[in-house]
Image (cartoon, rainbow, N blue to C red; front, side):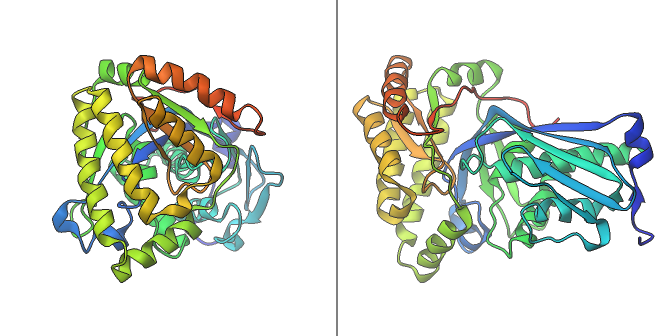
Length: 353
């Protein structure tokens, strides 16, 4: 082992270390990717996202010196490697990269998520944020200063962007770190901070919003990297850029409709964003999600896919009566689909902890 590595076995034998973080739903996703946001920083690219009570928990426990073992619910096999030989391109490569950054070995990492696997709710980024928090907490037990939320977000984004080869967004990690309902303005050209955060609702507003949204899983997993690459190619070529700029204007208006608790206006704006998205990102929709979005609009609600779509999850907003009616329709539509259904969740004001 190198001098930069440190066994965590003895301290974790006394007590395991835990941390948990929320996943998210969003509007204006993809604008958080530097490829898009940096050249057009002048238009103030934004994303609105809402943390959900579907949380991902990471537990660090003792293991054999020199080794790191990682397992996660929903994955059939764990991965175990000596720290100095851990791959950064395997199923759990991102998490091995994170552990290598901190330099710990002699630990078992267990991941458990309330959200379905590959459901486009930001699951891997949420797990990464929880892992960084747990490792920072472990460092604190050894007398080092624990990381702030801003530091966790900064590290999480750069780890994920680096190990993925670039074109990684930051909104998933941002929601996981801070929780709540936020309007994010992306500022990659700013040498002090990559983002500006505006909290849109207090605790009472978050509780009210939870009565005006519904979240569902389509039953089909997705792979966001492949989908995003195509969108970025079209953006860089100029083919879809005007459409993206138009969606950005809509998302900013959506943020303030949410802030004013104008749920009917929010529904209409989400419909507007979805109409443009259907044109510039048609591969984000699959037959079942397209049907669910149409059903939402017929009920007077607005709905859109989460993350990069092409399966995964979707969410809707509208008046309380309309949302309750939509829940019944969505549940009936999804009942024949394996693993699909309404997700039992609410908006969560808590970030990583």
